[in-house]
Length: 430
Ligand code: SPV
Ligand code: MG
Image 1 (cartoon, protein in one colour):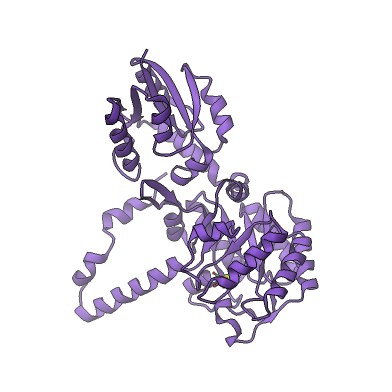
Image 2 (cartoon, protein in one colour):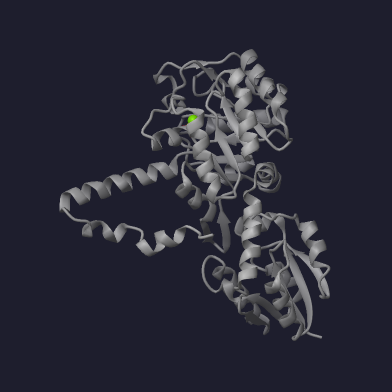
């Protein structure tokens, strides 16, 4: 009997999958691979069911065996089972999935295996099933808990700044192929700096919560990935508790609040402007108050320590970390504006000597030579690219404005613009 292998990344079985199985059965005994959670999130959407539940679901199907596939490129499967056939829908002939297809074809050639491709089932019902899964992922109860799951699943949760529907779409949809691996962002950061900048306002807690909530809603409308909200100082404790409730209800996964008080200025100014750090006791009270009002176990309150920014020293930063975790903080963000990452790494190493579990978050804007791998090696769980989308868009838009003024027409700028066809197809129609 020949062995026919197919890999599924689905949590709902529809006509398209049944079609593939029927076709596969014509050629031999069928084995299905369930793509492992940690691999699936790197290239496909986040699973609604975890890998064990998907394993159970697929074992109901008329096939010989269902196993877990632990790599995206099928190497482990090909090495272990040498399937005579690998079968897949023809939807992987273009886009980022093409790299997987090319690799599988190369490997099959080595021993005379064959690739079978069946036309992808595109009908109203299948389209509706896919849309339903996507919509579910956008719902507050699914979105909110996803950050905690990602912290468990990923070596490091890669987070990108968003401040609008369009930047949300970039965070949601950008998938790249790099050295035989597919990759994408895991989560989104609603930065106070970029949310304020998009409105032409300074980053001093001037853009009020009503407006910030509107930004979150714009992002949520078009995305499914989890949101980490930059809560600045968290404001007055009496206000903070209401905001925790609101954010949690909306499906935000985490708020990060920084231990400053009074008029907040952006951290990257450091000691060049007057900024005041909160007392440990008062900030702990704020954390405790927030934790007390939240209703689910999913939502996270992450405490951000400004001691290195305000040149208060490593011991102060570590003392605060201990106290904030003691007060119930679900994570610690440590910030620095030095180009050299050594103070950040020292903090992480010393924190990890004492605390192996509390998630650590960093924002490598200034110390941008550090790689995700190095951060992971020092115990960091979440990396936030906090402003790069805004900073890349601004010079591009400014140059376009200058050139239209210079040439008195738009032809000269056209080559560097996104084609109209692409921009109108970027937004999904319902
Ligand atoms: C933000 O993105 O608004 C932040 C990070 O708080 S930083 O700008 O580095 O302070
Ligand atoms: Mg901020």
